[in-house]
Image (tube, rainbow over all chains, first blue to last red; front, side, top):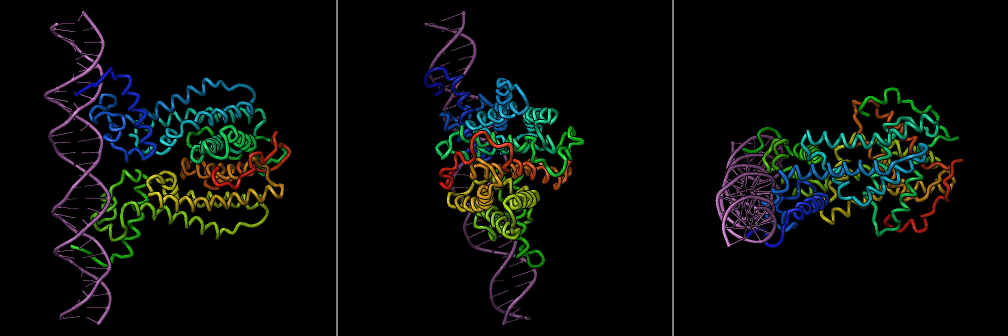
Length: 216
Length: 216
DNA sequence: CAGATAAATGAACGCCCGTTCATTTGAAAA
DNA sequence: TTTTCAAATGAACGGGCGTTCATTTATCTG
């Protein structure tokens, strides 16, 4: 038998992606078989190869689509205003974008090692582009004197880890709403970088001498 | 053949743990076969079962040993002084403990899902105990008025994510030494929670009403 | 209505998996 | 020297893996 009813192109394809995302996030890329994915989609394993070159491409496409959607969404967010205003907007954007996408966020951090070297480089470049958007805000705030911090690159990575970490513990049915969590984190982020009377004992930017030098 | 030379008990055992840790961290629990582990140890696959009940127990033992060593090390660190002093000591301890153990830290975050439900509960309880040590410091600082923050539990999880995130990007041969990174993060952590003239617009502890209620 | 084609089947390929176990080995104990 | 036994072997178990492909089917095109 084949094609039991109706035209399935444009239905099976997206379904494969959805199922693969969910199963990969639940059990890990290596632990999920093509036959399991096929079973949940409702087809035989062979049919998956009408929609993906192989299992590796399935993972790469999920991660690439996620990263590109992230970039597009940030573009659309259109951050404006003073560096502190931009930072708050970035914080709220990051939380709002990531909280409803816990599966793919988890995948993006855990399964990079299962990408081929070429594919890894492509995903890492997309991530780097996103990080650079935050780093630019921090650097702008240093120039204006709104922010005080020792190292823009390291602070960028720290803040992103702080914010993304929410996806590891947030429970939609738990004590706090997403909006309340966002308030807590806006506070933490703002206070962590804002210049003020409680200056660091040592000058900020101590390690920023070659801060453009690629790796942190 | 068996036991080609010398007595191997007490040598093979630890070697199995070391190799399993390294391979699990590199490729993921599900992607590593018992035969691969055995090959790197220098024995046949069957011999591994003299040292572990099964593959799952191998993972659990690694994670449990790590969490218990973390707890013991924190006990030994013997944090004293004012809440701000304790917080700085905790920050430095966390970084110093985790940076040289990047493999097992990664494992601890990525492979929890590969534990059986009972084993997961045991590891989660150990982690919770560690988190509670930081939360106690934050609560103490709220009492003394040294700290200002909206929610001790959420802030705890945030700070731990911030600090642990270092292991994801730190490069020992990179731009910064571990000590320099620790300085940047001590700054971020201190400023994120310290009370000062730049008070939050809304009162701290807004969401702390039932902060002891288990899940965040 | 006939032909083309998109979509899925299901069997098959060779290979690797976790685990068990009777057997062999060689060092330590007597 | 003889006995004992921890430690390791290597074959075997049933089963699942990713992927390919000739074939079948249901729908769309003309």
